[in-house]
Image (tube, rainbow, N blue to C red; front, side, top):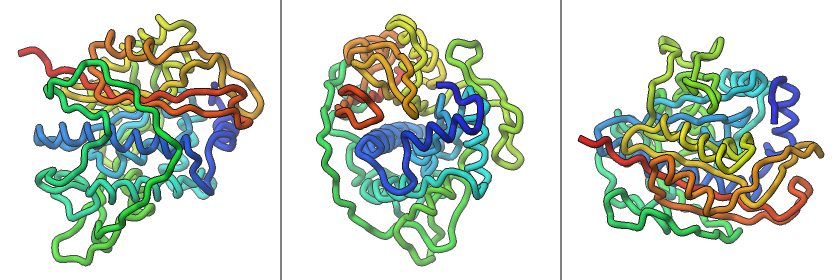
Length: 346
């Protein structure tokens, strides 16, 4: 779908997103993204680095950026369309007409508390302490690199049932720094909130980029794209985590082209880094405001083969089925895969 104009971008948001409540698809994708980002954050922390993340082809949607935004030291957003970038820029700058992502931020905050991340933090590592003791594994099918787990992850089918939140002390009153929801020593702590996640995400975003998976380079500077004062607007060559939701499948004409685009995205992942990708499988089209947009029909096996062909190893794979609901006219399936890039050969 083209977001060449602001009105087209907002039409898409009105169709697929709600400022009032999350639907089951939103929750499924947010939870998978949070788990994938937590995996990438652990790897970055183990290397003594702050998480550097890219969301690739984000459209006008800020929802998924909230997941790395709560913990990343550096977050880049990349979108090809001018309308999509305009809507994102309005949200980043606090425009009163911008879409309200507060309910999404509230869910992210709740999950961060559940993961044990909302506690007093090391200054260089947002939302985490000096060690990772007691933090739960990101997913039921999670396998750490080098653990001897099979290279092809099984597909988990998740039921549409909610999970209860456990609220525990989190960040400190009045403390906030770019890319961090951390706490100051000796100050009163409180649970992480949606407002904290929104503020931290805005502060973490270094730049808003133009992108095209069919182009070399994939990422280029966009006019007015620098988001953080004093930052350069040229992106790094690689990232600890690259997030790509419903991008390669939406713009591919064949399974072979899809595989080529996944390989293009994988080249942006640093050694030991991760690619988190979501794909609509077993459908030929998707819809926005009663307009149908064709897409390549892919099976789960084809998605996993494309990831393996890009030189990545699947860590977890999850699938959720959606019944026709007015947006999708046939049963559709959402597949999310987290895959790691092996370390560079010595």
